[in-house]
Length: 147
Image: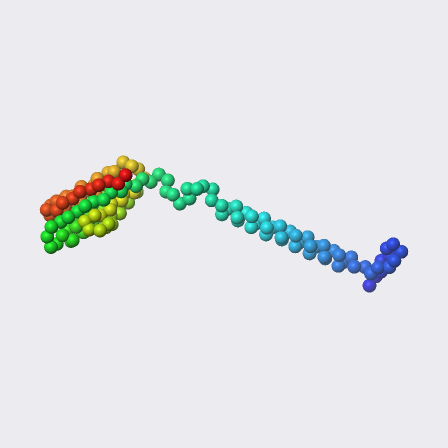
């Protein structure tokens, strides 16, 4: 091992150790700052930019309750046919209709569409078909729209 004179004293030459040590230190610092910056970037990307996340903008929903009574022993089958016929009578694009029971004789009807006029037309088509089937079997039908 060579000796280096410094300030009147002899010291062993550890220059190669110093170069490797500084290289490791610089590499470690670069890695540390890169990981820290990456974590901040991911955190910023996960912050929602709007309070309306998950809301379907432009869709309208019309709700109402239908009261249907059908006399006779096969009233349940006729009611099922009427509700299915009403659902299948909706043919407007991008329009969805849901019919479910609130408890006999009340049934909720919800129509969702991009356009208010399309939703109105779909609801009217469904209600007309349901009423047609119910009244042809001597039943009673009424619809109350929810506001």
